[in-house]
Length: 315
Image (cartoon, rainbow, N blue to C red; front, side):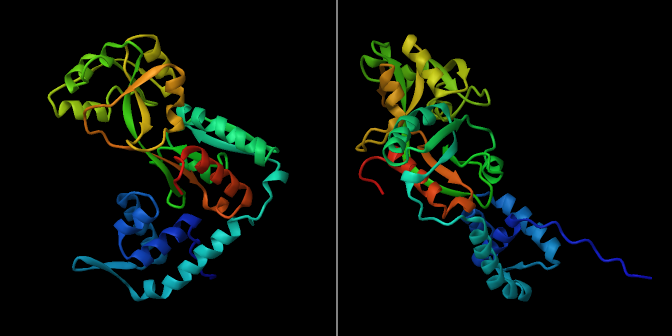
């Protein structure tokens, strides 16, 4: 009787990338940070690798994790596989933007798209007149769009990427209170109590009424009333400009040049008030699939986004 061979495991590139990170870092937590994923997700990936390779790979030794002999033997090979994989999926660079004929698809929130479009279009006209831009709205989970090639670049608050996704932070902003000229909050000192007493508009793709501002107010025993939740910042700013509603607007940190993400607020005539509460900063970055890392056309796109969103004088 012919022996029945066991089926080959269904492997993907993510496993190779995760194996390389785990064997290099010898820590689930550090490997997760390296690949911009959660420790829980990396633990699940390690469990899958153990099943596929039929070896524990990393075992506990006191407070540390140490590699098994099989893992030691695989370490250099795993790194080489990842480098070959990146080379295989990465087009060559060195392109002249002036002769580039390409449509780039970006994914961004409405406010980020509005901040990006004028600067990117101006750069394209000067440097790459054959380039066209398509900006799509944010999805709840953007990683698959990057992996599947439906999106070239995601720009915004990057917090849900696949392990292989490359992420670059561009600028860190603070949140300010946006109100119309003549709003009662523009007179006198803005206190947490006065801010809480005003009517607010919240921005949430998921329809949530609460956010970091509510947590900061709660620490002072205060709560605010959110009259409406809108899916985008531009609609929220337009509402604030038309009445006494308060909206949150990203603004440059003290001492930094103005951010283009504040241009829409200024165009609507909004006043930006410092919020007298500790709120977490907002980091705007860009994410892309590693197959585009060395592509000359994509390098031009990323450089253009940096130039538009980073304050003058930064990297």
